[in-house]
Length: 504
Image 1: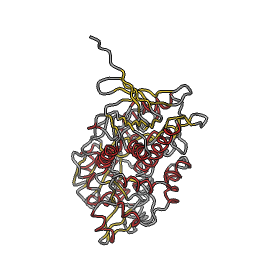
Image 2: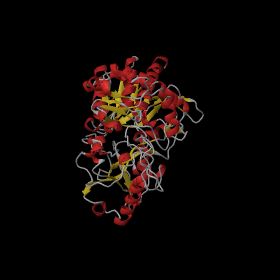
Image 3: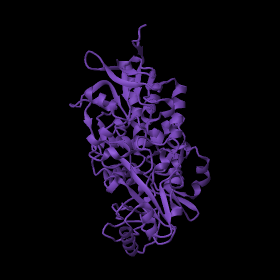
Image 4: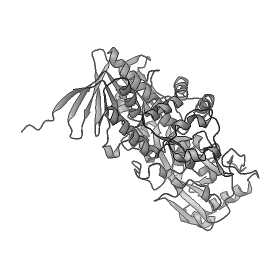
């Protein structure tokens, strides 16, 4: 009996590698431009969706007045609340300035201009494909004076978060004729006589080797954040201990294949998106039931300390949307790679319900600061001194969590805004570790989302989208930019890949 595996050869116009937001955006665009599409997803259908599945579904887009977007908002509550809702305008120049400011000027200006200018149009395009959006009241606004005020310029998200985003993407893709194949692990790119990409080779769930010839290939398979060895190699010592916030299948092999095919390494390979994540979370992949609920992002309302009881970040340096993606690495640098977010009876009711009322959750409560320190294994004397000095240093300004209120704590490491004394029991402590979301290094693309080589010459037939695109983010990132980027460049990649079918 012959036990050798059969090799199968097939053909499609466009092959897309990766079944997250970027891959599906590319699939929608390729299909609407007349191409036949095969989408390869490494995981099973039950584990699919890439990192997009684990997100809150937030999209950062530009608008002059939020009422201009009412026609793409599907949540009934939006219509009921909008008259009592304050959403500051977010013009293109402010989004672009945020990108420059948050990355310390290291974002590629060409990519940034594309991301910003096409953000809202892409949101509308997604809505036309069946993606449902809403205003994110529970995550991005505070109630006051009988209404809601949004902060941090991140207001629109998908209905049912990342879970809903992937479900809606999948339904739309299937309805339009995309051939989605799960447990399909890409192993190599096929090359033509002149080096052009002419398809892919992958193995299926049964170990069969399958070749799909195509005019174009779009790579949208994420970064290397789920591979501890690559994290140690590129991000540095200690990063192997980070908890993987998202999909455990994003291990970097497709990035390696792109580089081996001659794609130019681009962007910041030494930094990533990392957040305060429940210290009791699974180390090697996110929880598909809780998804984004394991993040802990109300820290601007309290203080954050390490096991010695010392603060190490300015919790109120900026709106949470502009600091949360860099504070994970600061936690990783602390003794034991752990930190504690502390609140009292005054601030506890203001915390995000989805995150701080989720279960299971790693937390302790106590009637005194000293008792809380003992329960959390924090140095008792160190924490007592930190809290006493912090409380005594607060500038008496009106507290307003929806704006940068200037209510500061003037200690050696200041808290610039939203400083409230921790003085009213019970006290609450949440243990957090570094949760890595995605890596910032990738490959370079041109205006058509086509991969280029080290001489900036386009590689025929090869397109890239999503977290594999390097150059947009470095050190930090404005919240909600990742999904927007995946859809903007996924749409461009899918369109370009379909157009290439006609010429090839």
